[in-house]
Image 1 (tube, rainbow, N blue to C red):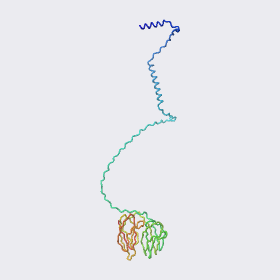
Image 2 (image 1 turned 180 degrees about the vertical axis):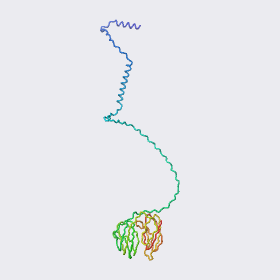
Image 3 (image 1 turned 90 degrees about the vertical axis):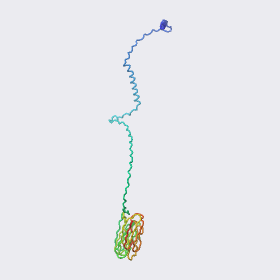
Image 4 (image 1 turned 90 degrees about the horizontal axis):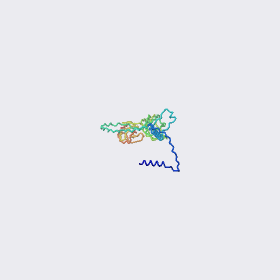
Length: 316
């Protein structure tokens, strides 16, 4: 048997003498080893728990190291009773769509026939506020004190209560004659419009043998009425009237003196004193009319020279 062979071989080695170079050492007895107490079930669970706790600590340390740190509070913040406000994001409201209104179609207006009213004559604007007038009175020949006249029409109203010649002329600041205003014998009562072209100082040179009066004015009316019937005698400046642009008709009558030597002359003037149109020029009695074209609406007047009674009718 194999076991018997091994036993015989082992016994043979033990009984054979040892080689002379080796010294036989007696075997040392082994010290008795204290037996370890048997592991309890609680001890077997404690080791894994320790390892788990250590692993969690390592993980917590790594997380704390890698996580971004908040700034440390200052001493004032720690002592302040007011807590620090944490900013919160405010959601942006979405834009609200505005509803588009749909245009409501307008109802179709029913045409109605409206009677057209007759046009009412409208006063036409003139030159503005009248300038202050100048009054003079005296007896016999005299040159009046100077007066300030502005460009535009000036109306001279003259009266004489003597029996001899009565003559009046307008002079400028140099004493030069500008216009003859009146030339008559005996009693006189009339007016004459004259266009003043340059502002300055003017005076009246009066030749008379009796008492006389003179009144000078420069009208600048804000408006004027349409023309109507006008009548008078001798030398005269008519009242102011308004004309529209377009045709205008003037009708005249004149009853001259039996032995008259002066013609019947009528001129149309504007507010500047400029002569616009000659309307009549005849000797003695006259009855006639004339239609002219008014180029611009405005305020006008008539300059009339006559030795008898006259009438004027104007219409547009």
